[in-house]
Image (cartoon, rainbow, N blue to C red; front, side, top):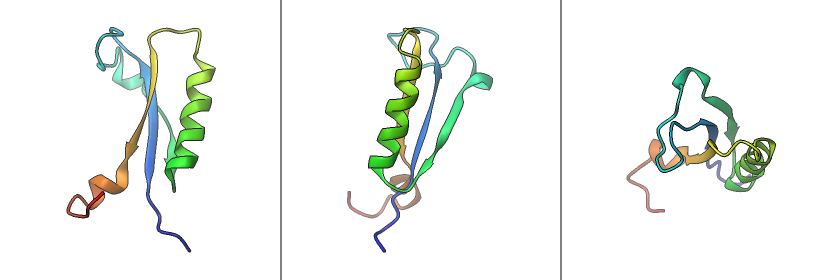
Length: 74
């Protein structure tokens, strides 16, 4: 079994496209937590494409495994 490297995918409407401040934190969507970057990327891509007509919508991938074990090298 390969190492589990957790990744969080989330997003929502930004207040301004020149910043990463969300317009409404209560409306931020948690797409999911994934066991690899590849699976997280696929989820990010699907969420991003679903909102392609909304210029202020942004989705992000967070490397949770790096936050959980910050002393480990990348």
